[in-house]
Image 1 (tube, rainbow, N blue to C red):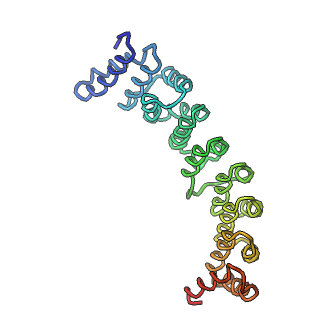
Image 2 (cartoon, helix red, strand yellow):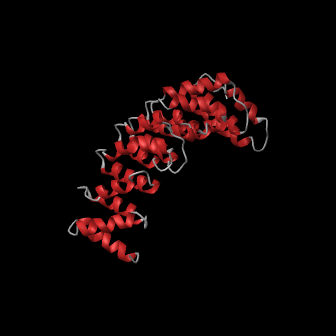
Length: 276
């Protein structure tokens, strides 16, 4: 464990980890190696101890954090250490939080996922909103995928941050969030999203408004049937068909007034299929 060659010392970490299954004294070798002068050796020894359920001293945790902040990318050893930090429990939260600002997008992506998981941060927008501003789409999507489908309590300020984002994927998520936000927040931002430059954002918003049945939703849907974008027309048609009391009559009226519109043909087919 004191060999001058770092590669050999790293091998000793692996051997001591595996041998611990047969004799607990091998764990003392790992403890000694958490004082190694090489931060990679120290980190590998510490995370193995954490996996065994041992509490890692805060000074050692800080050295691991500084080591990871200084690496340029994902080597095999860095990957092992990065994932194993989860075994430190609450002590690992601060490490992952710091690494969300790393220069490597791969490290930021994993760190955001682990940080939000360990901190149960999915319903704490103040923790994950910064991730929606990340310059890398892969990082943003990784975080947004963790959040989709969850009943998140978004405030007006949270929603404003999403709606005003320069990234389409974030604004799409804002549209999807209209399905679960408070009605006051829904009314405040739905029309901003309806005029978004992205047709995906607009169609997502239309579907959410149709599902929530907000005030004036039928009028919004019928107007959207005249949109130049077929995706928007189809989303509006689907929303109207889903409501026999108000939506279907409005759709039938649209068809009678606009029989040559391209969406009218599809709407008639869909209505016939439902026995209307």
